[in-house]
Length: 163
Image (cartoon, rainbow, N blue to C red; front, top):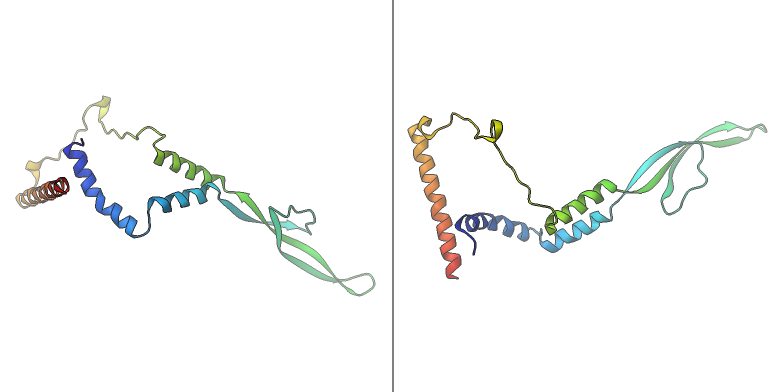
Protein backbone atom coordinates (compact mmCIF):
# COMPACT_ATOMS: atom_id res chain seq x y z
CA UNK A 1 0.00 0.00 0.00
CA UNK A 2 1.54 3.35 -1.03
CA UNK A 3 2.28 5.93 1.60
CA UNK A 4 0.58 9.34 1.64
CA UNK A 5 3.63 11.06 0.09
CA UNK A 6 3.80 8.75 -2.93
CA UNK A 7 0.02 8.96 -3.38
CA UNK A 8 0.22 12.76 -3.28
CA UNK A 9 2.93 12.77 -5.95
CA UNK A 10 0.91 10.37 -8.11
CA UNK A 11 -2.17 12.56 -7.70
CA UNK A 12 -0.24 15.67 -8.70
CA UNK A 13 1.27 14.04 -11.82
CA UNK A 14 -1.87 12.26 -13.08
CA UNK A 15 -3.35 15.33 -14.86
CA UNK A 16 -0.13 15.78 -16.87
CA UNK A 17 -0.12 12.15 -17.97
CA UNK A 18 -3.76 12.46 -19.06
CA UNK A 19 -2.92 15.63 -21.00
CA UNK A 20 -0.05 13.88 -22.78
CA UNK A 21 -2.22 10.90 -23.67
CA UNK A 22 -5.00 13.19 -24.91
CA UNK A 23 -2.40 14.85 -27.15
CA UNK A 24 -1.42 11.48 -28.63
CA UNK A 25 1.67 10.81 -26.53
CA UNK A 26 0.68 7.32 -25.43
CA UNK A 27 2.79 4.32 -24.52
CA UNK A 28 2.24 2.85 -27.99
CA UNK A 29 3.35 6.10 -29.64
CA UNK A 30 6.54 6.17 -27.55
CA UNK A 31 7.31 2.54 -28.48
CA UNK A 32 6.92 3.41 -32.18
CA UNK A 33 9.19 6.45 -31.81
CA UNK A 34 11.89 4.48 -30.01
CA UNK A 35 11.66 1.70 -32.63
CA UNK A 36 12.12 4.26 -35.43
CA UNK A 37 15.07 5.85 -33.61
CA UNK A 38 16.70 2.45 -33.03
CA UNK A 39 16.82 2.08 -36.83
CA UNK A 40 17.72 5.71 -37.65
CA UNK A 41 19.84 6.62 -40.65
CA UNK A 42 21.12 9.96 -41.87
CA UNK A 43 22.18 11.27 -45.24
CA UNK A 44 25.26 13.41 -45.61
CA UNK A 45 26.36 15.31 -48.70
CA UNK A 46 29.97 15.09 -49.82
CA UNK A 47 31.66 17.20 -52.47
CA UNK A 48 34.15 15.34 -54.66
CA UNK A 49 36.48 16.80 -57.26
CA UNK A 50 35.95 15.31 -60.67
CA UNK A 51 33.52 12.57 -61.67
CA UNK A 52 32.62 9.64 -59.43
CA UNK A 53 32.31 6.26 -61.09
CA UNK A 54 32.20 3.43 -58.55
CA UNK A 55 29.33 4.10 -56.16
CA UNK A 56 27.59 1.59 -53.94
CA UNK A 57 23.99 1.94 -55.19
CA UNK A 58 22.52 1.04 -51.79
CA UNK A 59 24.40 3.65 -49.77
CA UNK A 60 25.27 6.45 -52.22
CA UNK A 61 23.98 8.36 -55.21
CA UNK A 62 25.09 11.32 -57.28
CA UNK A 63 22.98 14.37 -56.47
CA UNK A 64 24.58 17.02 -58.68
CA UNK A 65 27.54 17.69 -60.92
CA UNK A 66 29.09 20.93 -62.01
CA UNK A 67 30.53 20.94 -65.50
CA UNK A 68 32.95 23.20 -67.23
CA UNK A 69 32.66 23.75 -70.96
CA UNK A 70 35.70 24.22 -73.10
CA UNK A 71 36.67 23.78 -76.70
CA UNK A 72 38.20 20.48 -77.62
CA UNK A 73 41.19 19.95 -79.91
CA UNK A 74 38.87 19.73 -82.87
CA UNK A 75 37.18 23.01 -81.90
CA UNK A 76 33.92 21.39 -80.79
CA UNK A 77 32.58 22.17 -77.28
CA UNK A 78 33.47 19.56 -74.65
CA UNK A 79 32.08 19.40 -71.10
CA UNK A 80 34.15 18.13 -68.26
CA UNK A 81 32.94 17.34 -64.75
CA UNK A 82 34.62 19.62 -62.23
CA UNK A 83 32.79 18.64 -59.03
CA UNK A 84 30.28 16.01 -58.00
CA UNK A 85 28.01 16.08 -54.97
CA UNK A 86 27.28 12.62 -53.59
CA UNK A 87 24.55 11.76 -51.04
CA UNK A 88 25.81 9.06 -48.68
CA UNK A 89 23.42 7.16 -46.41
CA UNK A 90 24.95 6.36 -43.02
CA UNK A 91 23.78 4.84 -39.77
CA UNK A 92 22.90 7.54 -37.23
CA UNK A 93 24.79 5.97 -34.32
CA UNK A 94 24.20 8.91 -31.97
CA UNK A 95 20.41 8.76 -32.40
CA UNK A 96 20.42 4.97 -32.07
CA UNK A 97 22.48 5.06 -28.88
CA UNK A 98 20.22 7.66 -27.24
CA UNK A 99 17.15 5.62 -28.20
CA UNK A 100 18.72 2.48 -26.73
CA UNK A 101 19.51 4.33 -23.50
CA UNK A 102 15.93 5.67 -23.34
CA UNK A 103 14.56 2.16 -23.85
CA UNK A 104 16.75 0.81 -21.03
CA UNK A 105 15.70 3.67 -18.74
CA UNK A 106 11.99 3.11 -19.46
CA UNK A 107 12.37 -0.65 -18.83
CA UNK A 108 14.04 0.12 -15.49
CA UNK A 109 17.35 -1.54 -16.41
CA UNK A 110 19.40 1.25 -14.84
CA UNK A 111 19.54 1.94 -11.10
CA UNK A 112 17.44 4.88 -9.97
CA UNK A 113 19.16 8.22 -10.29
CA UNK A 114 20.00 9.69 -6.92
CA UNK A 115 20.42 13.39 -6.34
CA UNK A 116 22.00 14.37 -3.09
CA UNK A 117 22.67 17.90 -2.06
CA UNK A 118 24.95 18.40 0.88
CA UNK A 119 27.37 20.89 2.27
CA UNK A 120 31.05 20.50 3.13
CA UNK A 121 32.04 17.04 4.43
CA UNK A 122 28.55 15.71 3.68
CA UNK A 123 26.93 18.00 6.22
CA UNK A 124 23.90 20.22 5.78
CA UNK A 125 23.97 23.14 3.37
CA UNK A 126 24.28 26.38 5.27
CA UNK A 127 21.76 29.02 4.35
CA UNK A 128 20.30 32.14 5.81
CA UNK A 129 16.70 31.65 4.64
CA UNK A 130 14.25 31.33 7.47
CA UNK A 131 10.51 31.86 7.70
CA UNK A 132 11.12 34.49 10.34
CA UNK A 133 13.00 36.69 7.86
CA UNK A 134 10.05 36.81 5.42
CA UNK A 135 7.55 39.69 5.42
CA UNK A 136 4.28 38.95 7.22
CA UNK A 137 2.16 39.07 4.05
CA UNK A 138 4.39 36.44 2.40
CA UNK A 139 4.10 34.18 5.47
CA UNK A 140 0.31 34.39 5.23
CA UNK A 141 0.39 33.70 1.48
CA UNK A 142 2.65 30.63 1.94
CA UNK A 143 0.44 29.34 4.74
CA UNK A 144 -2.69 29.67 2.57
CA UNK A 145 -0.97 27.94 -0.37
CA UNK A 146 0.09 25.03 1.85
CA UNK A 147 -3.49 24.66 3.13
CA UNK A 148 -4.90 24.63 -0.43
CA UNK A 149 -2.38 22.00 -1.58
CA UNK A 150 -3.13 19.87 1.46
CA UNK A 151 -6.89 20.11 0.87
CA UNK A 152 -6.47 19.22 -2.82
CA UNK A 153 -4.32 16.19 -2.05
CA UNK A 154 -6.64 14.97 0.71
CA UNK A 155 -9.67 15.52 -1.52
CA UNK A 156 -8.15 13.52 -4.37
CA UNK A 157 -7.04 10.63 -2.17
CA UNK A 158 -10.46 10.53 -0.46
CA UNK A 159 -12.26 10.58 -3.84
CA UNK A 160 -9.99 7.93 -5.36
CA UNK A 161 -10.34 5.55 -2.38
CA UNK A 162 -14.15 5.79 -2.45
CA UNK A 163 -14.41 4.90 -6.16
